[in-house]
Length: 39
Length: 486
Image (cartoon, rainbow over all chains, first blue to last red; front, side, top):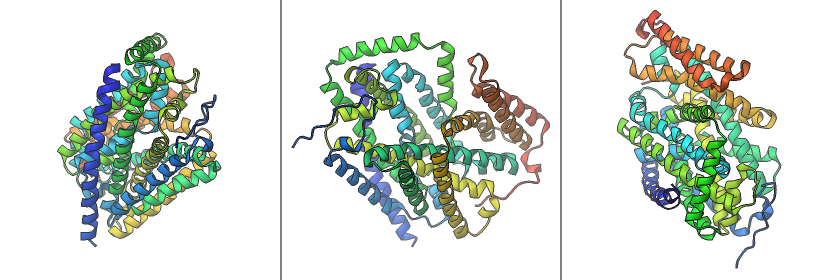
């Protein structure tokens, strides 16, 4: 359990953070262009 | 240049102004600038649907990030690290019920919620299935829970800001909740989702790094940490009865299940499959996150002084191991996650007030409904500031609301999603019976034999629902229906 929590899970968490960061940039661009388009 | 931190305080007050190096303070300022930029590009709500459910356009990844950010907030980070400091992985194993619940909601409930495209709130769904009275009751319970939660989070955030800046509590309360209210006022659910995702990115990356640094700098090898974890976990099991463990696991499983802000994420999702994926991923991530936090608590037990107050372990370890700058960033992320939780609750509460409690307001032209929802946001924020400033028993009040949430709302809501012709009588009876029995069991009888109020409340709600369903008529025959906004 300690190995999972100390080595494997932190890697999983950091990979999730990277994936969300990429998706967030796309999301912000989508929302911004959407609101600009509806102005 | 290396900044030297002051020694740890014996009382666990570790975030005082003197402890903040200039680089930490710069990191905090930079973080909020980044948050402001993120907010600037997403804060334009042009309709009530925009404000309430983001026009049902939130993608699966953002549903996941938003849910995960809401779950891994101060309670599950600061609180769980303290529990692991005392009881090793025991609390982690019990909290897995929460992860299981979120995954189950993802598979069986969230897609069905998302299918209600004409609904903006949980109360809207209850009205469709059980009529206007059920919507009003749901709205009132939701608002009570959400305002209480906003007040508690405001208090936590204000205390953190006070320790960073040295400002008095009242000023910090107004600064934290006021700033959040203004952000919510100008934005909507899509802006909230974006800021929550930003908090998630920072927290999900910084905390594992903090654990690695603690492990590498600490005096013990991974094998020794593992040995200590086993000892602490065994002690935890020895000092907790089976009934206590059952009650904790049950409370985690049902206490927050399908809360208004989570239902709001399902309603805002772009598609049923996206909603399912978001909830399942968030539940799986919670299992990963809680293990990391538990190990942080265990490492804290090895690295930090003995007998620290449990709630200060997380911040104490961060301050002890993180380099200057990163510590400030982590504190800012912690404060940011408090604020984004408040954003979500204020948004849900204001929409619920307009849609569920005073539905005549929702029938007004769209622009007027939007303006009223925004005004309600400011009103509810002011109310929550007053509660958190002047009510000493705010946590007790919130705990009571948590204990009635599952018995009153959970069962009728799940039944509404699965039963073809739900009866208004069943919904009303279940809400009232679940609430009354749960409250009486908790406040009058003080949970005899350790049986949790949530369990007796759910039993009563189930029985009342069965009776109401047997005796009542379907909703189509009910004259109290209010047409839903398309």
